[in-house]
Length: 115
Image (cartoon, one colour):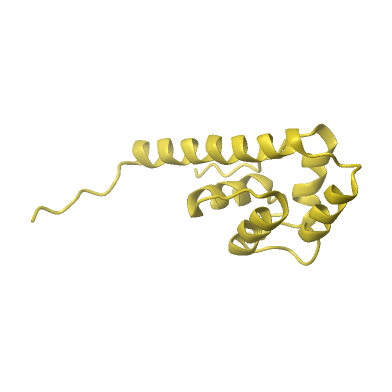
């Protein structure tokens, strides 16, 4: 049985870009159907409140609050995009404010360039 070669940096980058597009498409679609002034919407936002969310908890809350299912790769990409303070967790404000302010996510990406 032949060993499978590890993915190249380019292949890894392409998978991350695909995961980023997929995850943001899912969130954008949910945001477009979401009405921030309705009571049911308030209940969904309440589900996102609480202490900062680790990636697995963020994934669960997305599923419970917005019926969004994301892969492990997609959730990690979302954490990288929305985690403004760099603690590896998503605070409610880091996610809900961009989602509600424009009807879709506009994450502020921190520079993750490795020199």
